[in-house]
Length: 338
Ligand SMILES: C[S@@+](CC[C@H](N)C(=O)[O-])C[C@H]1O[C@@H](n2cnc3c(N)ncnc32)[C@H](O)[C@@H]1O
Image (cartoon, rainbow, N blue to C red; front, side, top):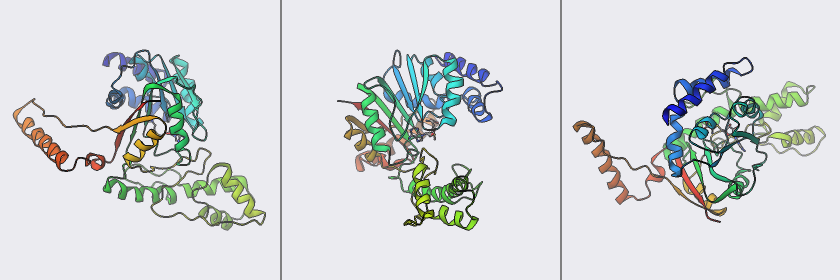
């Protein structure tokens, strides 16, 4: 199986070498092929505990669609990638869908998923909910419930578990960096390319090129959290003498990209919150717990891993819910019941 998956990624690397493909897309293809990034998705698919053969799989927040060759190699009959960003969707169509006919790509708007009801066997949402505008989340969860078949599964994996104190504290710095910049600031997770304050300035300048620099700065500073057409509407009202509410960035709040998708940067979740959201829309969900195992491959390893296992079970008995906050990330498996 492993070999046939690698063959697909070598093919993706080859078709990504052409001149129409962006450097960014090509870098991803190379990562999947050369560093076998696809392997880091296998454990995620294993959570579903259902064979992919003949399945219809939806990847929400698919970016360029690099997961598709893996899903297809594992037997998926059809795969649908969903994203909000045309900068990802267009190359996904041009390269992935053009070379893997089982794959197609659609755009999500306002949290809606343009996919038929009761048609998906598995939905993957990896590192996405923390980027979906929180205003759209209930719609997206309701849509997940609508498009899944009864018995179908959804896997939600995310790296922003705010039940974990260290993760929650770290996010404050990440939020500040993405809202205020400056360009190139290293958050420890990534590097800021275009802070949201700067992006608001750019959008405002683009819409109203005659506006003085001071006004642009004032408006950008006081429209934190606004995005898309509504940002423009609020500024138009201000310029025509209407009431203007100053919305400054509040430290600790997750910032919003002012672009049309309203994408946010690393919104944090309590795992229970995600379970409840799925539950509200007809999916029974639980946080997946990974129990450590003893490594019998040598005496030293067995001793070391035995200690970890003993620690795990002791803590499990004393604090049965500790696993919820143990890591910076969490994985939730939902099964559609109705
Ligand atoms: C961090 S990337 C994760 C990409 C991919 N799932 C992975 O495993 O690497 C987050 C993706 O979510 C997408 N996204 C953000 N808001 C979305 C929405 N409302 N609907 C669908 N995709 C969205 C972004 O455009 C981006 O491609």
